[in-house]
Length: 212
Image 1 (tube, rainbow, N blue to C red):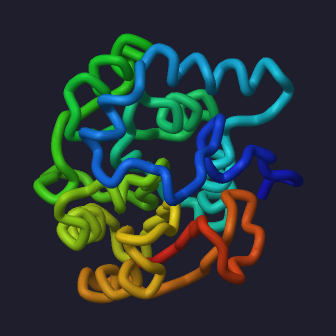
Image 2 (tube, rainbow, N blue to C red; image 1 turned 135 degrees about the vertical axis):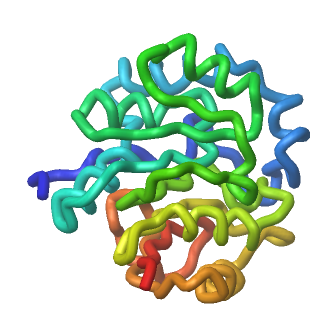
């Protein structure tokens, strides 16, 4: 396990009040320029902050329980998957939005990118770790279906790692645990950040579940 995990904030650059986050994916996308979105992460790194807390935690978990590869579910423009690949971790990125996958593929054409909703995903291989970063769960239309799709792609003992904002109208920790239980996953940990600060309430959850 690395001596230190990256110290990025749990939410994207320029975090918003959770109550002001858009309720659905199309609303979010309509408000965001993808190039500017990527540029904010780059600016964060240039300012001396590490924007790769998700990749850091994924790497640490694989060090403790070393079986990959990794599925980056709802990978967006590829930030997490590209960083995992840079660290030598085999990764596949999946997103239902073709614009997001096009942006990811342009940055890293050598990686494997798939356009598909996670609830419909049907890949031949099984993964040691599935990462759902950046509010993938609350923005999904079929949230329980997304969890089930991820669980289907885990090897026995594999891990599902998800982080999302807690706000009215979005899933609660207990609701998410229920979908995981229905998909054959058992809870391992709850944290407040990608740096594994203990979860004691608050507006952000990082949850780890394991396939039986």
